[in-house]
Each structure stands twice: as structure tokens, then as C-alpha cells.
Image (cartoon, rainbow, N blue to C red; front, side, top):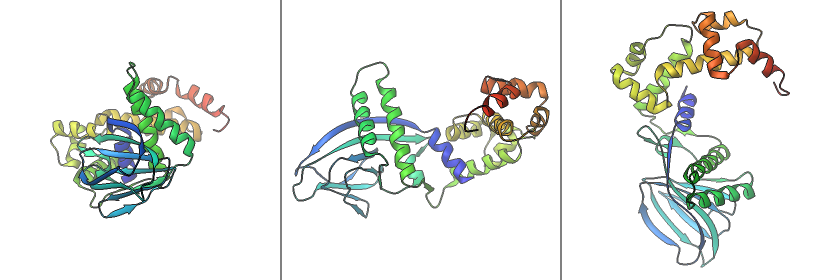
Length: 276
């Protein structure tokens, strides 16, 4: 269930961009032993940079993304007076009280799958960040999300840092319990007890990790499973309702709220799709 916990943290992280820019670096590009309260995402279009992240030293190549996590001692400089261009974005990514790269262990440097597309995305991020349109900030955040997805995917995913910490362990325990009790009448008090929290605090704790209240999350998981059953099995609608602990009427009503279709209509539509 740690993968589930990581996925929820990533999906519900709150992004804030404090800078986004394109630079043509020269011999004067140098910072030594800097500690920032924001993360830095670089995309290199040329070669000639030397970075030190904590004790790790890197010389990124063109087409590589590099993350310098918040709170880490950083040094950057140009090698042999070379000139090269790169994009940079300063940002925070938090889910609850956790900064993304405090929680996740990832490579520092990855190679973009499609360098031209990544360069275009970063260029658009910079343009929107500096734009003044109504949707500029939102579009910049969406592009940063895409770039972070590229970074995580090309880096082979992510692992929880060790030790994982009580926050993540408690979320994992609760998520596992929910998945094993989708057909049961689970109470808020039961879930709060698993995390050793008062129910009122547990609601805030759970929502900071998943973006939903415990009951909203449980109902979502029930509908996700029901959608899978409708597409991948011949399970009857009444059996699906029973498996998520609901009456046929309530199940059909909730399913339609989540998908816009009745269970039978959803099954027919999805099975008609070419790849289903």
C-alpha cells in the first residue's frame, strides 16, 4: 500500500511556482553552498554545468532534467567558461505538511524521453508564468505537473525515503484497511483508531494526504472497483452492489453520479471501445 500512499500524495500535492525562466549561462554562473526553501527544476539545452547536490556531483547533458530539492545544500557553476542555455523553475510541491522531495527518494537527474517536447513544455511554462492572462498561473502549474510526471516516470518512479515516517505509515495502514473492507459499514471512529487520532483531527489529517474526506475516499474506491468489474467481468449489477455494501438502488444512483451512466450503460459503452 505504500505505492497507493505515494500516488495519493503526488495526486493531491499543492504547487506554488516562485520563478520560471530561460537562461543563457556564462562563466559568471556560480552559486556556492546555497540552501533554499524551494525546489529547483532544471532542463539543460546544452552542456557545461557542474552541480553539487549535498554530496552528489553532476555534470548534466543536453536533454536532461535535474531536481535540486528544497533544504539541500546546493552549488552550481559553469565548467571551463562554457556557454550553454537552460530552463529553471523554482517551486514548492506540498501535500499536507510534506514537501514532495522530502517524502520521495528519486534520482537527481533523468533524460527526457522526447527532448524537443520537453523543451517546448518548459518554454510554455515560462511564457505562462510571466503572462498576465486570467489562466496564466493555472496553465503554468499544469505544465509543471507534466514536467514532474516526466521526471518521475523517466526516473523509474519513486520510493519513500527511509525511515518512511509516521504520517505515511498511518495513511498506508488506513488505505489498506479501506480496500479490504469496501463491503463493510466502516465508521469514522474505526479509521481514526487505526491512525491513533481523535476523529475530528483524523478528518483533517486524512484530507491533507488524499484530498478527500475518509467517506468520500471510500466511496470513490468502491466506484473505481465497480467500474473495473463492469468492464472486466460479467458480474451482475446486484452482485457489484453487494460487494460494496450497498443496496441496488443506492449503488446505481452513486455509480451514475460518478460516471454519468448507469452500470449497465457504462459496461456497454466501455466494452464498445477499441482497446477495452
